[in-house]
Length: 357
Figure 1 (cartoon, one colour):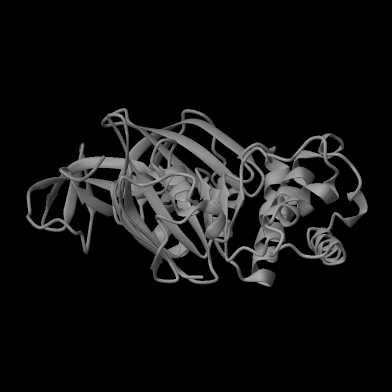
Figure 2 (cartoon, rainbow, N blue to C red):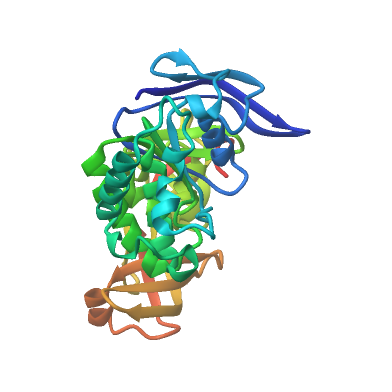
C-alpha cells in the first residue's frame, strides 16, 4: 500500500504537535519516524492509523484520502509499546481476536481462523506457548504476540509505536534483528516510531527525522547519518563536538587554533560559524612544539573493548572534546591522565551561526 500525508496540521490546545507535515512512505519498506519526545512522531502515526484526526491535511492510502475513513476501514495493523494483550485470553485467542470480531459476512470459518493463527505463531516462533496466558510470557514474547495479532487481519500497512521501548537492552536488540528478518519476509509497508537512534539506523530502510512538529530530514540511514542537513540532525544522530569560530578564506579560527575547512557551506568570508565533528573523526598524537592541531589535556578515558573513549580539555578555551580511537591506537600511545596531546579534526561540517544550534 502506498502511504502519503500532505500538509498535516495538528494542534492540542496551544501546543502545535504537527506543523504542515508532508511525506511519502516507500511501498514495502520499513520507515522510522525518529525524534525526541514531543516532536510529533506518535501523533503522525496515530493520524495515519485513524486514531487521531488532523486539524488540516490529507492522509492518502493508495492515492485515496482516508481522513474520513474509520480506523477499521484503513486496513492497518497497530502495535503499541505496552503490548495491550487481553490478560484473560490465551495467546492463541489474543491473536484470533481481530478475526473473530469481524462482521459475520467477512468472518472466516473457525477452521480457517485456527489455520491462520497457527501459521502466525510459527512465523513469530512461539507456537509452543499457544495456550498460555500473557502473564506467563516474557516481555519479548508478549511483543511478538502483539505483532502476530496485528498481522492476523492481514493489514496492508503495519504501524509500530515504540515497539521495543518497554524492554531491556539485550531483548530489544534481539527483537530488532527478528523484526528486520520478519519484515524482509512479509514486505508489508511499515512505519515505526522510535527515539532510539541506534534502533532507527539498524532497522529502517528510510529515516524521517522530526523536531518540533516538523520534518528535519528524510533519507536512507547512511545518507542521513553521513550527510546531516541541519545542526539538529547532526547532534541527534550521535555524539558531536562543536567548534565555534569565524571563517576566513577556507579556515575556521576557533580560539587560538586555525582549522582547515575546505568546501565549507558558508556564503561569506569572515562569518561566524560552528564546525560539527564526530568523536571518531578526530586524530590524536602526543604533544610536540611543531605538531599542528589543538593542544589538549587528557582528563578521563574509558578503554574497554575495541574502542577507547577519551575526554580532552582544550588548553586555549578549556572546552571539552570527546574523542573515540581504537584500543590498539590507545595502547600504542600509552596514555595516562593529564597527558598533553594534540587533537586534529579530520572532517569539519560547518553551519552558519544563524543556523547552528
